[in-house]
Length: 363
Image 1 (spheres, helix red, strand yellow):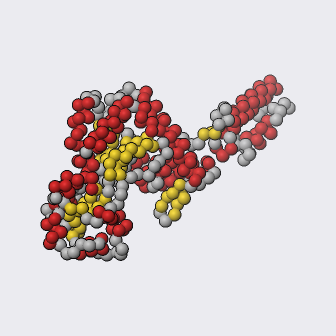
Image 2 (tube, rainbow, N blue to C red; image 1 turned 60 degrees about the horizontal axis):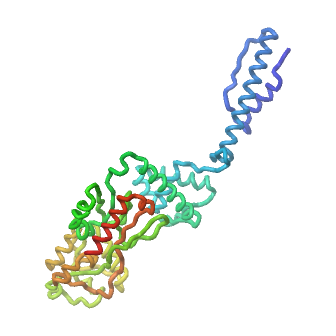
Image 3 (spheres, rainbow, N blue to C red; image 1 turned 90 degrees about the vertical axis):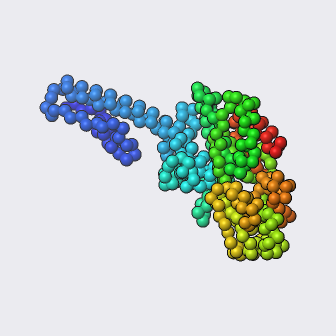
């Protein structure tokens, strides 16, 4: 009775845990058939065995250990879907903020980061007390991935037919836009009629596709920071308020005064008092405004004391409408323009950068 040589061995191999089955092998033939038909069966099984081994070895060659994708050249590639997620988490140092930016759930973001850490065999972040920080290896890897993804984005924009038609998107604090940008924006369009810019107004140092005007941001690999103007932080009030109010000799005396706060800039008071006051205290009264800038109007009208970037109220101080308090206690910071170095390849972006620096310098 003719049996396919090695058929039982092959059936054992493809069903073992060491070699998972590569294709189903349910071959059912009638029991009593002629020798010729059994010979055909043997040939059929040997053919399947040969091609299955070829497929198996090919998969192993391209997959390698632990599911890592290996190119023919032997280079190992990480899971591609995890890289943009890792870049966003590293840029924001927050899973929640990265999830919001990427329109994913925090759980999905965490899983992608964990998958990448498992693949690399290293920790990319330290997580303690609900805070995230890079490990040394994680920061070095992030810098490379961030630059690589920037190259991909820039290449995509370069080859896109609409790359030069869409507007630049720039983030900036509202008060900066009101003081420096809005009065001179017409000059930009007169100089560059084809220029289009969308400004995203925000109090925070947020990230925008083409650049952000930010308050003394931390340097990041692959980014350029232009210093535009002083952004020293100090309390101000009107002469009339100062005349009628309780004595104001030290920052601790502010507990007896009315503080004016904008909803977007309330942290400016917290920061200034935290660095300058000698003790923690509760102020007599706070008046909160929803829109930024109204606290300055209230200060000029004698309602209380506001905190502001002094460069934004130079005219009011020069005219005597406002008085800067505790100038020796000023928090020294700067308005800066932060953008990816790759942006300098765009002539349109370079024109905007030149206009922005010239505009702020004049004012």
